[in-house]
Figure 1 (cartoon, helix red, strand yellow):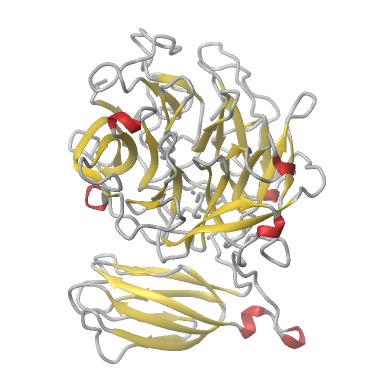
Figure 2: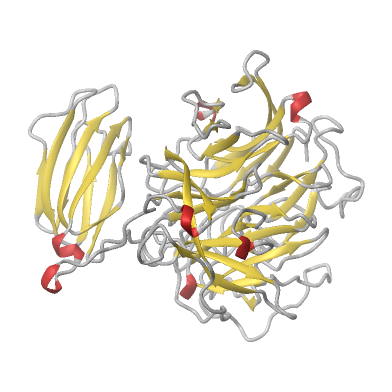
Length: 573
């Protein structure tokens, strides 16, 4: 183990799985409004403010941090852009990227802040692994408080990842002044793929950091120190950074005003969970999925019995919140509410990534019950007539103003410009509609039969950036060559084959309108070997008009189409 620490080892895979019975919720929760703070983003996954600062810093997964100033204006120049240091993201679905931001508690004096991002696999890592995640420190520019100095990067920690998914990365300073770093189990499915400890899984293997929450002192040591009260401080066998373990894919963490650490952990095929995490705790994965026994060889059928302790004899800690996939796919944490909606005071606000196929996230408010699991209620969104959200939820974060913000996208992957940040407000302050549900046509026709859809397509070297699922109907593709060489756009399937007669030159846009019945289509660039270099994708056209994740694949928070397999889709992000 090295500091600049290097670890083998994570993702944020979200899941489309079987509908299962989950713990009951109480009646419908209070109504809320959403007021838009920022729009035009790609995939906002984090939000933070320096202590005592009126500015809001928004993290876009694609590698950019933006500032919204005290007037509510998003500044045109990014605070930080590290796209050139990251892996190339798949616009259709990816769990890697710039995933977390935390400002030093004394940022006002020292200008230090920290980011967590996915870099290309380092040379020393196993050749068949996926990427190396970096925890890095940067400094604000000496000349411009709204600009970071990109030349000040100091890499504190590197974590090698066997698969694309289950990265964690939502770093946060606790009330103790130490930095907490959630890491997933390495990715894939069931904690059993390459790079996962055989017979045990990374979540239960405390000799590596994957599937753990780390805790470090950024003020001590080089590149950091170990807090003396870390549960494994001084151990020769367990990474001294480990604070707690037994996690699959901790997607968003937060501290409440009592100092409690809430961790939302995305589940495999059946259950999602939120835990209150304490030092040294073993939170069960992959012995259990939420409160239920789990069998990696048969993930869709919980066994009747399983171990109640980890390999070292320590008790497994159950979550305080769980829900089955009948109530949504992929848990997204989460914030204890301190904002302006009185009915939510003190409740834990969390969400699913989506309640089904396509952008259909749901928000919930949870409160402790008398023993056992907490009771939670769905929240009604006043912006929309049906009370739904109609967006994917990527994160829920507390701003420097004490208000809670919902970070969303209309896309399953890091593409387009539908990303937005919304502040939870009273109903009478609700902003514009947040999205559009699937509609019905006249005379009993479904939306799929009457839909007219416009799809923006970007051609670059070497990828086709567009949604991978759209509703059936008349579709207009606005295709722009944003690359540096000529490209073309061809679609084939269900008896259709259409391509532009002339190739698109750099900067050129052409339009194609076709009638697409439900089915699966191949979209690709037929110029030269561009198809073989990655300019291809499978397009799903659905009767329902919802973005459909393929069954049989395990995909998370945008639905994951990566290396994860295991009967379900675990996506978010």
